[in-house]
Length: 104
Image (cartoon, rainbow, N blue to C red; front, side, top):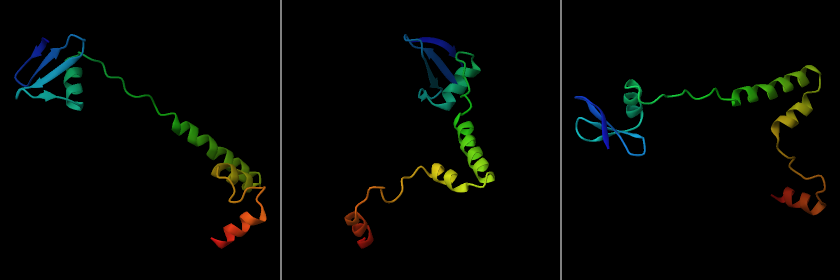
């Protein structure tokens, strides 16, 4: 490993594979957020912020369709579509199945 930066607080090494290792003054490795902060401060790496989550935009759209259905005076279909759960009894259930459900 090649020494890149050395000071009283830590030593930064560059490994043969191009990655960096940070060793504290106590000769113990520094990892995690602290390591990233040290490498960014020495301009050895660039940290990109994560992209805005797309889930927020996707979760807003179904809410709008439910509101529109409620305004149209037909709230039942919007509620059924939003739940995504199948009905408790299948459409082709026989009388035996209905009796078994009643016994439970």
